[in-house]
Amino acid sequence: MSTSQTRYGTPGTKSAEYDYLIVGAGFAGSVLAERLARGLGKRVLIIDRRPHIGGNAYDFHNDDGLLVHKYGPHIFHTNSEKVFQYLSHFTSWRPYEHRVLAQVDGMLVPMPINLTTLRMLYGGEFSEDEAVRFLAARAEQLPEIHTSEDVVVSTVGRELYEKFFRGYTRKQWGLDPSELDKSVTARVPARTSIDDRYFTDSIQCMPLHGYTRMFDSMLDHPNITVATGTAFKDIPASVKYDHLIYCGPIDEFFDYRYGKLPYRSLDFRHVTLDQSQFQPAAVVNYPGEDVPHTRITEYKYLTGQQHRKTSITYEIPSSEGDPYYPVPRPENFERFRKYQELGDASSSVTFVGRLATYRYYNMDQVVAQALTVYARIAERETKQQRP
Ligand code: FAD
Ligand code: UDP
Image (cartoon, rainbow, N blue to C red; front, side, top):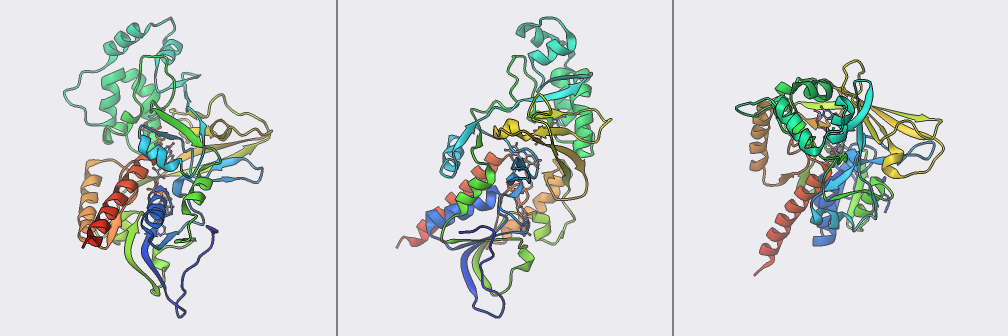
């Protein structure tokens, strides 16, 4: 079926009935729609207020035929064989290991900081053991590690922290690393080997024909109706459903009763250039505060596309716009917990995904979360069916 059509009863006409209404057609919503329809034979209506499926992982071919990620680079990596096997039902894969360079001291050096980075910045032929001693001598001894500043200065010292992390994080989050939970910069730990891959997960690859094709395949089932360009608040009362799965921002669902949960947004500037290559790596990070963007992505590295032109995206962080990143700070988690209590008390609604559970999750973590929610639902159904 087409995923761009709205197919449900309109007010005043025949009403439409579903077992589940799913709000949000990103990973969280689409995995649950697929499982409920194929696994349990449920009738599912899945909606998204954007004009497309795929959530933030949506990709599309631009006017020049180059595959572009509308909401910035999405690289699939996981240690979960279960998540990988599940998604493999809907796509073949292209082997891909992500590598990133950072512009530091007028050079492009590998990021995360590794042996090659240290050799390029400090000259000389460091061995791995020397690199370990070099970083240990610079690492600050802290009694406790709480913040994103702590976690970096306690492993690589202040100079490297300032070169690679302080400016980037201030731009990305509009906050100093000392004001952000340690989990943020801990995503990019330094190493003393020559491994220059951005991720170390055992499984790293890209969907062969892109994410949107994979989502199309997930949602292609007679029990699934997809309505894009449809916000939850616009669902007519004639649409009946037994259960709601909500994958949007939880604070919005509860009309901001306890105030807004902060999210960081990004402005994506997509540019196509009349040249076959722009930069020497898929992503170049710009930690300097002299430019507004944090990174530039060149998609051909991710997609393997051969083309005489190339497509790149600048990411410029912003406090306004779509909610992309939950901001990990204790007071935000505290506010989220209050919303979560409201959510727990609403037995007919299940909250799933990055925005509904206010977690800085990668795609594989959201898939794992959705599969866990599905397993719970399936178990409940099985119990109910037993005499
Ligand atoms: P989303 O993808 O955000 O989907 C939620 C959907 O709900 C949205 O499409 C939204 O329009 C819809 N919605 C919300 N409210 C409503 C409403 N009221 N009515 C109708 N629809 C609604 N992860 C990785 O693993 N690797 C990466 O390289 C990576 N890179 C990223 C880069 C960027 C710039 C960003 C922002 C994220 C990145 N991620 C990456 C994380 C990844 O995007 C998320 O883990 C994943 O998209 C979360 O899926 P989700 O379904 O929870 O949310
Ligand atoms: N970070 C940084 N410098 C870099 C790369 C990352 O300071 O060159 C910090 C920054 O705070 C960022 C976080 O580490 O938000 C996590 O980086 P990651 O690349 O995982 O960010 P994402 O891809 O989720 O935007």
